[in-house]
Figure (cartoon, rainbow, N blue to C red):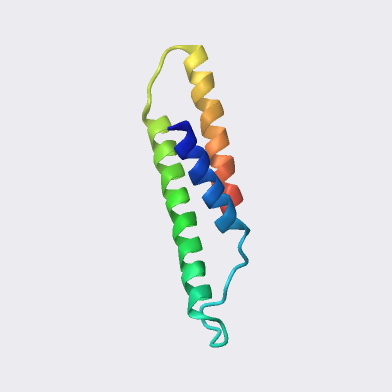
Length: 86
């Protein structure tokens, strides 16, 4: 599982390093358009996953101050990632 996560992270990092492609540009190749579409799809899935994690954290109720603090820290991290993605 850890190896799979690392591989997925490496693949996503490679995709995120690719330059954005303008789909309206007729001079770009089909491969470039597919790569751009793949890049957008990966980013959208990442946003969806972060939003699901955010909703999960917000739905949790706890009376433990330590657990609440951990949830607040996790929420802050997720919201930071979401705002960095735009």
